[in-house]
Amino acid sequence: MTGAVDVLVVGAGPTGLTLALQAHCHGARVRVVERRPEAFRPSRALILHPRTLEALRPLGVTDALLGLADTAPTVGLHLGPQVVRAGLADLALPDTAFPHLSLIRQADVERVLATALAGRGVEVERGTELVAVREGRHGADAVLRSRTGTDMIRCPFVAGCDGPASTVRACAGIGWYGRPYAVEAVLADIDLSRGSGGDGAEAFAGRQGLLLLFPLGEQAAWRLLATRASDSTSGPSARFGQPGPAVPRAELQQLLSDAGTDARIERLVWSARVPLQYRLARRFRRGRLFLLGDAAHNYSPATGQGMNAGIQDAVNLGWKLGFAIGAAEREPADQLDTGALLDSYDRERRPVACRRLLLTHAAFWAEASTGRVPSWLRAVAAPHGAPVVPVLLDRRRLVAEGIRVISQLRVDYRRSPLSVKGAPRLRGAPHPGDRLPDATVSVGGPPRRLHDLLARPGVHLLLQRDAEPLPDATHGPYLDVLRLMNSPGRGLMAVRPDGHVGFTCGAPDVAGLNGWLGLIGAAETWAGRT
Image (cartoon, rainbow, N blue to C red; front, side):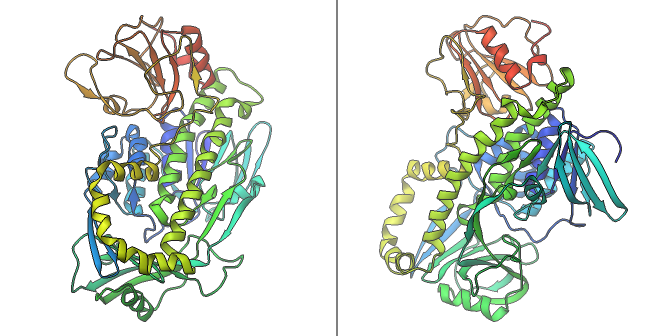
């Protein structure tokens, strides 16, 4: 290793790569280690949600991701003999630039993120494993092992993005609760001889579970994802969420036949059984050690939360680590890791993870449970209700509201210590802690979309049209000021780097704003020219 390190990121999946990008873009020196010598393949996750794309946009990777994604996906819902076609593009979501679901392989997401990170001079160190880490008063001591030997480093923070069997979580002594599912997932890349169906995704809901076909196979044309009863209770050695033993071709064909499709497997390239669990860490932080993604929470595949949740964790924490490092360099302190800024990660993200766990658990029960009631719902009630489905799908606002919930567009941090209301209060605007919605605005010149104007790292201060100029404001690397000419009023809104509102006031409250900037570690950017 050359040079000092502020944040050691353990794990180079989407979560770890996003965290490294976000922290680096906000001033931290990062090092990323991954125990696997090669990137893990095949992909497990296949969906990016609108909120995830919003969160990644300031990091400059969204265009590359969209270029590799299917942003106008369609799905055929097979409910017994009934087939309902649904489109997942151009949803009724006017407050986001991404009103659609995006089908994209996890492998492609990782490739884009790693390329962006390398462009900033940070290479993933593959084949390097975290053996142990211990949190101390002046730093975290980490022991790393690679083919060249064992090394020890000390750095201010260690981020565990190392999956369900997290070494960081174990070393931090953080337990987690939950249990294995009695249902497992089956994954396969296959070529099919198909007698019916379109080119989009296909979903089959049957008595034995759910079967999905995505035109996103990495080594073949189709990716199969199915659920079925596990033939044994997964023991302590189970690698939850990780592909296990291969599934024989005959069993895969039986899954297709049981689902009611006449498709035949022409070629089987790869398959695996995947044991599943639902878990939640009892805390996401202990001192200088942090947990993100699958190291902090495990979900069923229902609603496609895993990769998206990890990326959103990383976007939340990354800027806080960068700002904490900057604040410590300006004013060194023995207790760097005890401030409200870093405490806010657990206080903001863990409640979100709890709610997401309930959502995915309920959805998975309906989709995959082999119990009498859910089996009856899928096999009997769903086919009888099929004629109603197109009517529901035509209600675009209803569908959009479902996507808002699934995509976490409704998440807010109103109870966070970083959500502050100045005096006087700003009326008719998002509350501190809310996600900032997208809108058409004017800052002088042609109208622009607000999220497009904020698509870069840092804190954004939004002044209403009639607000007094801010004294000593600067357009520095981590602080930007915009005046919204189409927003009458004298108020101000400060937007965090993750797109959530942090501070509001009905008239420029300089003392309150300075206090909030100091709270998040950005006070030194609040100086310079008018």
